[in-house]
Image 1 (cartoon, rainbow, N blue to C red):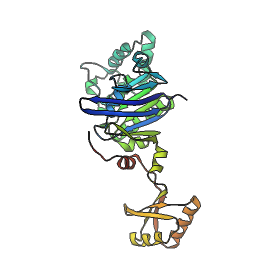
Image 2: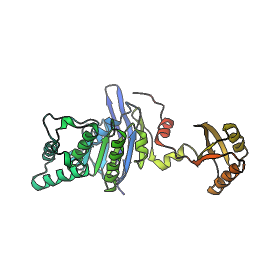
Image 3: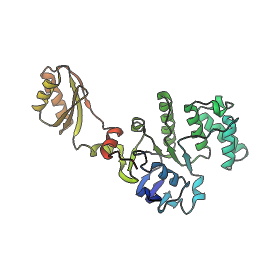
Image 4: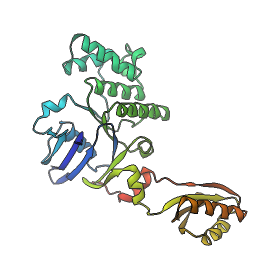
Length: 311
């Protein structure tokens, strides 16, 4: 199956600064891929190239097998780019703003009216259609920017820090909108420094540092790269010393490390072996209050895969 987006050996320099170096990855239709890395890693530069807003020095970007570098006009109608900030147009209402960009996208007559109505309903802006842009909260501004990005019904969405500055409720609501778009079959490439949000949203991640690919793959696959064993978190009311002694006697326990009033345990064994471990610890009367699998999240992956150097 041809990938919706394929970045092939992409490179871009600004003077002596190598912003992107031989970068390759793919995004399929219906998938959400996180694009993460330290500040200055080259994320925005890559996104701008993938959105036809900049040209690479080397490499190519394919949209379902067709080069957007060679045929940018063919890609414009299929790509929606949401920048990290929206410009404020003085004395302009939400509906007027959307109408302007719908006309820029060459939507005409009833089709234009229908698309404006559709994106306002999807982003829940219908009741605010007459609100001036300058009076919008950060969350409403981000919804409006997303609505503008969706006007021409693109197949690929490229979102640069869309949740930046949003309050917790607004982030949850925005995350639900992005998931709904992927469920419609759209491919989504999204950058964010709020890795807890991406953990609950993304199917896969691309990790970038100093313009180079550090790691990429499905979240479920990358989590196993950090440990070849199952990870368990165990906490006892009897204290760390008693729990550590019991774990030292337990078959299958490869390694333990103290964490958050308990222990993170690397365990080598089957589900039945984990059940026997739990039974053993209960028999020791350790007063267990937590015993569960630990899923490696994106923050742990990010800290493990990168060294934090700025470019």
